[in-house]
Amino acid sequence: MEKESRPSWEQPAQFVLACVSYAVGLGNVWRFPYLCQMHGGGGFLIPYLIMLVLEGVPLFYMELAVGQKMRLGSIGAWSAISPYLGGVGIASVVASIYLCLYYNVINAWSFWYLFHSFQEVLPWAECPLNSNHTGYLDECRKATATQYFFYRETLNITSAISDGGGVHVGQALCLLLAWMVVYLCIIRGIASTGKVVYFTATFPYLVLFVYLIRGLTLHGALNGLKYMFTPKLEQLANPTTWINAATQIFYSLGLGFGSLIAFASYNHHNNNFERQAIAVSLINSSTSIFACIVTFSIYGFKATLNYESCLERVKLLLLNTFSLAEDTINVDNITYWITELNKTHPNQFADLLPKLESCDLEAELDTAVEGTGLAFIVYTEAIKNMPLPQLWSVLYFFMLLLLGLGSMLGNVTAVTTPLRDLRFVTHYLSNETTNGLVCLFCLVLGLGFTTRSGNYWLTMFNDYGATFALLLIVLIEIISVCYIYGLEQFAKDIEDMIGHRPNWYWKIVWAIVSPLIIIMLFIFYIINYIMGGTPTYQAWDKDLGQSVTTPYPPYAQAFIILLLVSSIICIPLSALYTYCNRYTDKTDTLPK
Image (cartoon, rainbow, N blue to C red; front, side):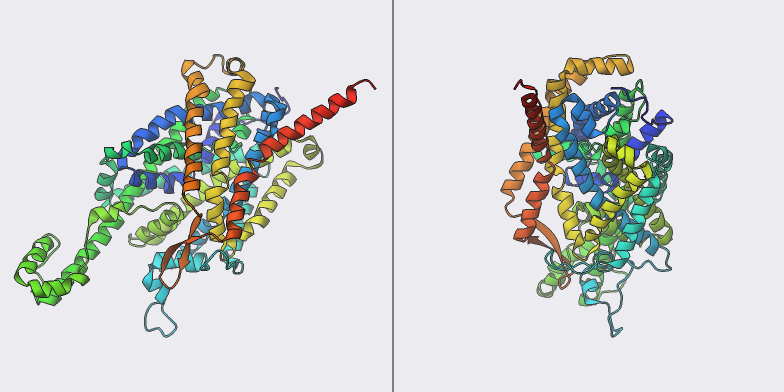
């Protein structure tokens, strides 16, 4: 299987950094902290680390081993194991294309925010005035300045998925820039990628470290860290906690997309991928925890500000209503005065009660936000209240951009490597042309996400484009390696590459534990999808200034089904095509 003419990484460090840059992405910053917040703070680390050992590291190891042994992209590698498995590689490529289409749109948003950070006053720091200059715009006043900037200025979003709207020119130009940057980073394949990853894999850590120092010095940061590190162990009895831990490990490491197989196919035959698999998996999980500490320090700052602002409003209300001296009530004794005034002026206090806010720091910290809501709304809300907000905004969105770019390098490589394995592509097209055509194809289709309703379609692709497909792809990968190719043969191949066989732990996890976990996840998602009823999305209501849950229209539901099956269907169709070809060949060789 050795392909001596195949290009290789100049240094093993390039391969490790490429895997780190690919695996450590936006999910580490905006998904993991959300899960910690939802599932008991530090207590969530227990199922998370268990799933890392039982699922994450073994599957990461397996994909690297397959790629390095076969020295082919996903389609060629699985076809080499069995001609009937070529569809597994095709399904991986289709899932990677779906990911490429919308993932770079998020990078375009990062460019948009980055460019808007170079202003004397951050545009999301305050609401714009209405046409009469007599007050703030109604939509912004009902929402917040950060929400308004994201939904109205950045997306200019429609009120429903059915209302397409035109292309947002600013976003389209940012998407063009994002794809130009990606193309320049992969223009010569791994020769270019190997150099870029030195920066994309390391600089985000510098920014995170700077943010950690800044975050720990913010007022109220300790409230957030205390919330994070106080485990709610009762969450361990919740099956959803374990399901989300397994899911986070699975998607965070980028399993099933074919990127890891593609990267490993450029390794030298005797490269020690076992140590690299363990190292990259641990780096990825450590980054998630590190980013979580940074995020919770900022959570604490934002929650404390909101809590103290609430107390200040309550204080002013009490002072004005009961004509008390200004220094009578403060933050420390406000609870006492509420109780006292309720006793001494019950009728007056009863009239005041509907206006009296309930201020609760714990409730502020319990407010969980994930995804774009965390990255582009919660973080920007905190940044605007920091000293020198422009500096922190530039650093933050540049970090997001590098995290997204690093993942995009792996996503695009998962598509281009199998194409370069095809002889007619290699014969007629150069590396630069192949990579350019793939980027152009994704750019053209991705422009649909820059329309005013594009965010709704992006959410649909994110929720349904690869979720089921990846679980099935990886399940078939494990079964193929253990029971079709043979676990003993696989162990011999590993021994041939790194000098020793995998021990009993790897074999047990590959053959039994990991398949059972994936089957469990698969069943959970199917039940969840069926029991969930009509699929819904969050539509922005400008009159209310908030998102409202709205069912997808019938044509969108049909498209969801198409997304769910379009990649998976490649597996049986490819196997059927191979079978028919072989049957035809046998028929042609029969004596006439």
